[in-house]
Length: 147
Length: 147
Length: 147
Image (cartoon, each protein chain N blue to C red):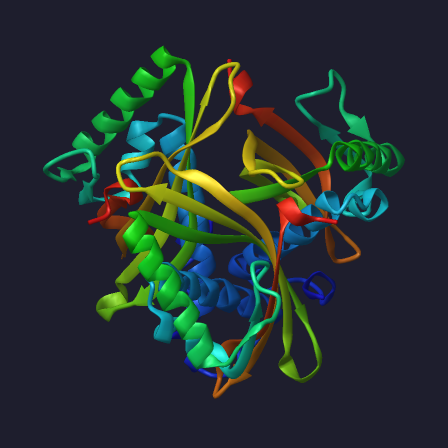
């Protein structure tokens, strides 16, 4: 896999690596694979979603949140997809990446029409652990709750 | 064009090439250019859409399907756009690529508002023919028909 | 930033650079930063939007248009996001790039649900100025006004 072959040689190749990282990351999330998804965060990774007053911290808590949400969606007969786009990568000190992107969440009920459920902005800090990109920090804001 | 300049030198450059391939592939599809679109499949390429019991196989059949659909859309005064996102590329043996992506289909009636028509998952096998990427096999599943 | 590090070494690395360029470009637009957005055009850059009979030409006019639109959206309590996808890059003479993409415009009212406001096709000519990509010419067509 791309992310394990070592240090990428250019800013442009990192960009492709980030896109590929997000694709797998969201496939895991939307498949309801909480443990697999949590592994794409650092061990102490944090996720501040708009729906909670405090960030979710650590892989166990991250996995649990996804598994619970997936069970609720299955119960409701609905599929959710997370589509990141307009990914802007800033290179910081120590190889840290600050990434801003847009996130569409598409919901489709079984036998029904898809709808645009939420439009969000996602601000991530990505770092490398043993050569692989991981989310260390994520903050998400919803467009319907802009100040 | 990128795809004809020879063997790409890294996993990351192949990623950009795949994205560019899909952009042109979908522009041809949405323009109703059945023959042009069919050329982005291998000669024996197959496409298993959710709407049919059997895959469509071979360029003639692929082109015919697109041309018929385009005529029906023109008749109905509607434009469809196929937007692939969250593209995850796995490198297999012999340079074969397994690609999973999300596909939004957006429909816009003349003089009306666009709507999210279908949300799908697209699983492709891409291969190189004379240096150019081609779809050898495509399977599409609709989110409204998830088991 | 990637775009200032010099001439990119391959077609594939230019592709990532173009995507990154568009991400920042749309973040500036959607943040209502007219002046920042105008700087991503050439000094004589032109933008032919579907809503106007004549193109908007030059950075002052481009910035003014965005600032006015942003003020109107703030007044209306609505956030707009411009999402480009299916980006196809053609390399022309003198390093000029012709780029066709799809543009979804997503509108979210404060406290309400997001909606797909417009679906468009965007045709750009990008050029390099002091190593950085800039839009020299943009033409946008709306899917609801296809001939």
